[in-house]
Image (cartoon, rainbow, N blue to C red):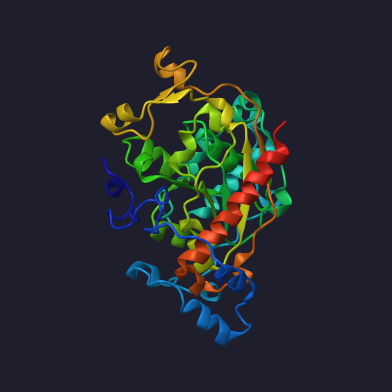
Length: 366
């Protein structure tokens, strides 16, 4: 089964996943950016036009603008607050274990699906998410023992891009981030994590990802999520993050830049987030790259437990997680949607996000 078999918004190979850099060439930073960074959308229009004309030619796809300007977005139905939701009396031990607050938050997920269909247009199913939640909640509370801070930086409404570090072979950092945001926002918000197309092509797993709210990373999907005023969680390191060896722990790899382009086009903030713990959950001693290439896998790891214990050796260690959200980076307040066409500016801004995430990691590692 391929991505296009199950996902109505997945495209062909002409739209690479967000795990791959949408810009074809590396660009260097020069004094041009010092001038450009001081320009605001409403200031010095003639100078801005002159500076932007110095940019190298862009590929055709880079000339596209967002489908609808932010002011023209059709707003989704309002999600109720936790106190507004009516829930039935607890009917079993699972309800009592989850508690009233969590049950109310899960109930709000039903408001994300409009009409009679059981799924939203990206495949998210509130019923499947509710059934899966107790298992992930057990990981959140008792296995990874997640602590978090900085929730005041998460918007109560409207779109935003949440960008963080990625590690640990299996995407438990994304799962813990989604649960943490759902449980610390009111109205509760479901962050839609962007999934690399390779993971989105795995039979059964791709269906589960979609049903619990994650979305394959095409540009169209990303733009549509922001247009729906949703929170989009991205890991700009991509596959390079999950295959870091133990000697690179908590050292961010190269950031792909597509998320910055999307944030500029949609005119939304970028919120940096640090996941402390994911680099320790499955320490990779060595990545056998020739074997990974032969098997068509992103990584062929050797860890203290894998391959010695078989598939069980890939299970994460019970490390304590700490999630820290940083102050929003409001690039959209300085640069308009047309700035997404400037590859050098986009690269420069992606590096600013990378530095912000790295600083959060360095400050919060104990």
